[in-house]
Each structure stands twice: as structure tokens, then as C-alpha cells.
Length: 253
Image 1 (cartoon, rainbow, N blue to C red):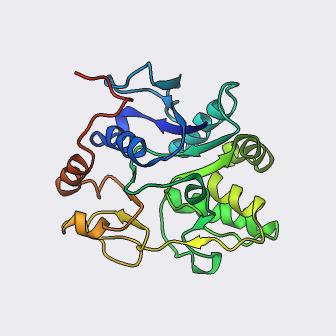
Image 2: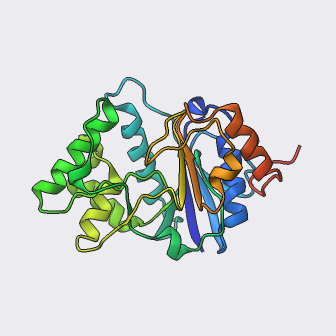
């Protein structure tokens, strides 16, 4: 048994992303797992099949989103009943093909430190700061913020957050974890051959255009994720058709 952890803040949901993410893992995770949600929950969640740790976002804190994410992660890994190994999911990640723990647990990265582009914004500032800390310690500083499912050990993650001061310094936990514990490993680099990202109509080596035939674009891929701009009506229809059946995590109405 392994736990699947979702941080959740309903006010930031654009649609019914969580519903379809849960349907996707029920269909394609081929091992025993339990679902935990930390945060608030929509009214359709089945309390008999989902473990919930309530959390209310604290407003007015600088870099609030990352502060909230790490706070929720600490609540999950600090809970006595959660499994030592866990899978971190997000509501805007969907599993499109059967995946076992070997697949999910691979060390994956977007690109090496030398290829990190220069961008502006809060998240990018956090990425640069995180990778800078890793470089200072002599690590390779791979950018592992792939927004894909990841398998972590909760005791190691707790140590990472503590030793780096990740909450106070607003550092990205995935890159800290993988670079620190797997310093000599070569990650599986991001490729459209196994995952699809929709970030609006962008089309480049990382993103796919969300206005085309999504079923064709996703054919043979294991994962799909998106941001708010990528979740257009075209993608919503695809998810409704791909995962039409309610999961055990939903209340049947």
C-alpha cells in the first residue's frame, strides 16, 4: 500500500480537474493505494474512500502559493498514518496509461542547470534561488519541476525541508530532493514522447497546442498536465470522454 497525496485549494480550481485526475489514477495505477487530500475538498468527494487533512490557506504571505504547498506537504508527511513512501500528485495531472511504481518513481528532470532559461515571475525566481542553493553545495542542480507524479520518502522529504529551510526560504522541494539524494544519477529528461503539457496555444519542445486533436496528441503518452490557460473547452471534452466513469472517490448522485 502506498499513499497518493493531493494538495488542494478549491478556490483555485478552474473546472473539475481533481475529479478527472482521480478517475485517471483509479484506472491506471496498477497497485494498491490510498488517496489523501490536504486542504479543502469539493462537495462530491466521498469521505469513505478519501482521507482528508483540513487546511485553510493563510492569506497575505509573500510567495503564498509555495508557502501553502510546503505547509500542506508538512501536514501530510507529519501525519502518523501516512505511508513512508508516497506519490505526490496535483489536480491538473492525469495519468493516460498504466503506470507502476517503477515508472512513477523515476528521477525525471526538465533540463540541466546550464539550460535553465531566463524568465520573469515569482515561480521562476524560486527556481533560480533553489538551483543556486544546490549549486553552492556542489550538486548538479537539475530542474526536476516536471509537474508529473513523483514518488518520495516522507522522512527524507521532512529532512530536506528542514535542512534547507525550504518553507522559510520558499525553495522548491522536488529539485532539492532529487539533486540531494541522487547526486550521481542521470535523470530521464522531459520528452513529448511520454508526456504532454498544455499551456495555452504554445507549441515548442515542452508544450503542445491545445487547439488540435488532443486524442491524437496524447496517443501513446503516459502523462498529461496543464495550467489554467491550457484548460480550454477542447481539453475538457477530451478528459470527459477519456474518463467518463465516476471513480470510487466520488459520491454518486
